[in-house]
Amino acid sequence: MAADAAFIEVQGLSMRFGGLLAVDGIEFGVREREIFAIIGPNGAGKTTVFNCISGFYKPTTGRIRLQGRDIGGLGSHTVARHGVVRTFQNVRLFKTMTALENLLVAQHRHLKTSLPAGLLKTRAYRDSEKKALERALHWLDYMELREFANRPAGTLAYGHQRRLEIARCMVTEPRVLMLDEPAAGLNPQEKKDLQGLIQQLRAQHELAVLLIEHDMSLVMGVSERILVMEHGRRIALDEPEAIRNDQRVIKAYLGEE
Ligand SMILES: Nc1ncnc2c1ncn2[C@@H]1O[C@H](COP(=O)(O)OP(=O)(O)OP(=O)(O)O)[C@@H](O)[C@H]1O
Image (cartoon, rainbow, N blue to C red):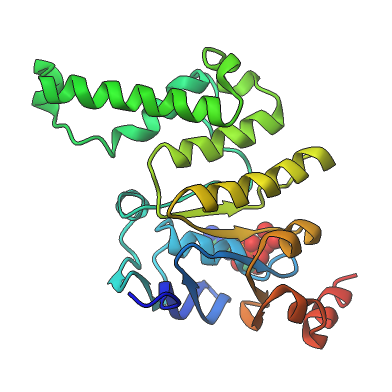
């Protein structure tokens, strides 16, 4: 694949809820290892685009391709198996399970084992369980969460839960990491750390990052390109500097106040 060929290609994407066209003919491509943000006023359709790409919604019309392969409407588990995983606006961990258990459960659908293999505890099964544990511990260390390994996820500080949610994505070794408002509820230091974390994840892993975020300093600081949506439509797609000076974008945001 050419260096700047689209890794994820979204064409003519629309999503209708009854009388409401929440997403209206959206087009964009995300390049391999790109950090790509989607911004726009409340209700613009950003999360709906995420839900379509990650397989939570079946688009009303349009195509979504990952490296040329259609993934639109495949369902969230299948899309995740293709390497596209996400976090949610409101943290969705298994709150009564420990941090470590959350990272083990996340890997189960990715483990190359069958039910009989699990029942018989075959060598292959034991190897894959061991690797899953190693990966979980690695990501707890990476996110500086090791000391909370055996704590129920719901008892962790909010900023730690957010990092655990990203770890839960990373244990599956994704090719596309989708973050829905990852800075929401974080303090200024945590936001700064998050920016470093996103850049580090992209640098160290073969990973594209798709980001929905309202925090403009994070978006401008971390993104290579930004898609701006308003009323379900694309009003701009460009690099941060151009977006900052785009009259339609300024109007969309000022119009919100
Ligand atoms: N499942 C649904 N059923 C009906 N309407 C929906 C559904 N999901 C989203 N909508 C509507 O679609 C529109 C776009 O919502 P969406 O959550 O995608 O916007 P957003 O840009 O992510 O907003 P925010 O920044 O507030 O999260 C809104 O009018 C919303 O009420």
